Length: 216
Image (cartoon, rainbow, N blue to C red):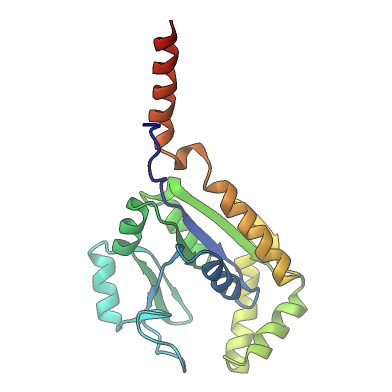
């Protein structure tokens, strides 16, 4: 017996201003590692075309959402453009206990709450910057999801989002999607090997010490 045990799961926080590429990168990470669990958020906003309950979001009314917050059932939550968003805690806690990583596509407020939670010591936080503000606006326009008014509001909010970049463990400029994806994979692979994520190491070292004792 070598003391090897399931490692602890990571809470991988991926944040960026809208349009910088975090949702696309999140999808690519999920395709790269099917064992990676995506934290499906709850929201009070109505579903967009093609969105499915329980896949993109859990769609709740405001009273149902606020009830979960009051009962302590949200790991993090925030109000954005008049709608509530949050991460249900129960599925995250189960995944971490089983040694599975959970990926969060959240803003800086959500990331801050997760880092300050009881599970905060197991977080890996990553912030994605756009190569320029002009490129950020172009991406928002080209994806065709929002009205001109919403795009303008998102652009205003992006300055506040970017101002929190120093709160993150890693910050990447997404000037090339493939290269940014590769850098994210490298970071995650390394962070999974940190000592604090491998509880089985304690027993492994004890076993090695016992072997030394047997040799004397």
